[in-house]
Length: 291
Image (tube, rainbow, N blue to C red):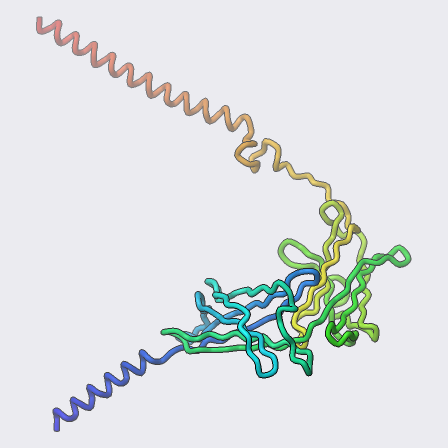
């Protein structure tokens, strides 16, 4: 009876061990579609998982990208997540994709086949093709950004949709006008631009953004406008200052440290020479005394 119990315990432990090894994590995939007017549309993918009660990025996994329409599923490429579990898949043109013939909706899916650590996973996104026509206009000496939002395939205006107007900046964009600019019955917004906004050479770059729409994704139109306040370049980067590049080192920093270095080495050589002279003189004296 004891041997039978031990055998059952061993079988249970082995089974548990295999079960633990066979248990794989679940990958969560996110997809975002972004279209930049007069540019290349792209998809941003994000892979994450719950490991030891913590959310972690899933890096270096291969994702297969498909275009789905009707009952068909066509592979359009592959991509691999980076260290942050992110990847960007760029399309040369949206015409590469085939929309659903009834709804004019594009469907793109990504698939992860799984590995020794994680189970297979998939995620899809559906969107329609939207376009933003944006430009700078002037009325009564006031500058405005005007933008019209359209559904490309339906050739219709999109009304009651929120657009954001923002100014490109180095770290974070500067929002212009209201937080939410709703398109009117003509699918258009009109946003006034304040005077005196500084820009390099007086040039400002505005973005009109349809942000993460459930129906159209993210669409961005860029408007370059020479209406900014010219920034006077007071930089001394190309002068001989402490913060200049190596080839613009201040003259005194070239001379003074080198003088110190040569002076110290000169003193060391002088002391070593005197030590040799003293040693030589001592040797001669001892030799003379021995005679």
